Image (cartoon, rainbow, N blue to C red):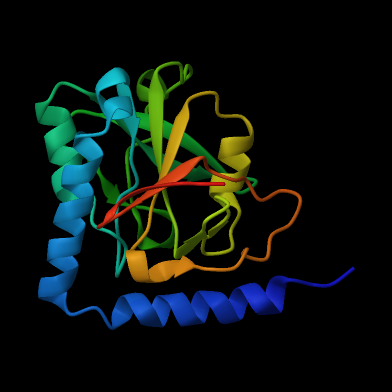
Length: 192
């Protein structure tokens, strides 16, 4: 059995560098296109709850999207890292409820009354360094999203820049979860 971890690390470095090279003004335009494309999706209109991530560094920005979702009356929840490389989602009412948590990523407070227990009619936005056209994603290597998606019953869509699409199948293991689609600044990619 081949150890795919070194190859994944090389690909992470490559796609991190691709994202870092995007000029800020270009990145802002791309992020805006992804945000606008997301809120126009039929699945967005159909879902009551949006599970977002708080963007950091060169990730596709979710700040404006978070505010739009709240303004449009969507219930919004963000992840909080827990023991065992697990994520729990907690609802928020304003972006000010997020504070630096694990890995410096903004997280909601671990208030039990805001913890999401039911994910019916929820749409989870999944970040990635890269996606392939089969729906496999390259994340940061912690396995948090794969563990969460293994027990998630709602809808999913990934976010990825167009030039971070990996044209061949990404290396993946038995615990890596495929997504049915992802969104780039050029539109939705339905996975094979």
